[in-house]
Length: 343
Image (cartoon, rainbow, N blue to C red; front, top):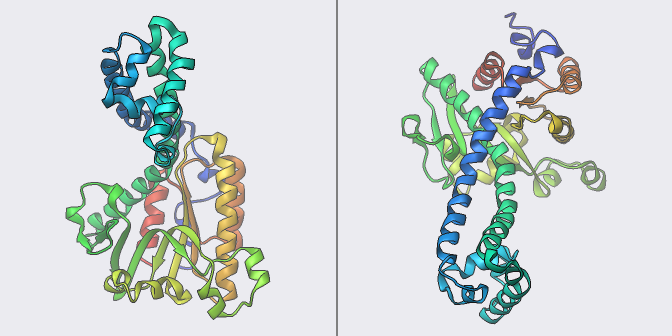
């Protein structure tokens, strides 16, 4: 590749290259279904346990005397775990009496089945939330695996940080990619930290930028928007040290690159996710420009439709994005990650 060409040219010839292929969509749906099934397993086990214990009751009213299913009864009644914390023992007892009388008793001798069905109905809301979170976790896991492979293949040193953010660990100690909250390495002699999902206090909405002074001090002192991927010019020790870490994310010159990561594979929601990401990237660009800074901006996702691809390509060609890739294409993902790890 010509060193004077923009980095996306290493793996993209046109907007069509960014479009997710039908084969990649099918593979993504299969993976998503398997992941959802794993999440559902624990709810099914809970329902089976509830059924076995509730079967000891001869009448719906007997359920009120089975102490070790009272929490599950509240769940079946539609009381969330959070709401249950605000109820005292008398409130819970009254709710359950009314629930048994008005909902389970009318089911006759099928009251246990009715209980289990309603338990699963309420738990389904919880499962839905977990599935929505799974999309982000899945995308980050994919990206993490590409980062790890990049350094292992190149023989470069890489360390990672977990949620405790107290100690950098060698990559050989990583057994679960979902534990990673940041990576650190050196590019030449330059220290780098790649952080996941951090709040960047420099980023402002249009309203915030219009309503306050654009001085650097104002930009550092208020606001902040979450960014999926931030490559920082800072040492590993400075990033985890409590007195200095805030400084690492408040100084515009510490930001080497910022990126949006979208892991959903469903084409039905792809355009909406891109609109969110595009608007956020525009805010990042304007906010840093107001501070006289221009870090590299990039986008990587799984579900990219033709209309999205055209918009992304236009931003690349205009210089509004530095790089972009479809994560379902190994060649594109490897190229983008390699570029990021060498900045």
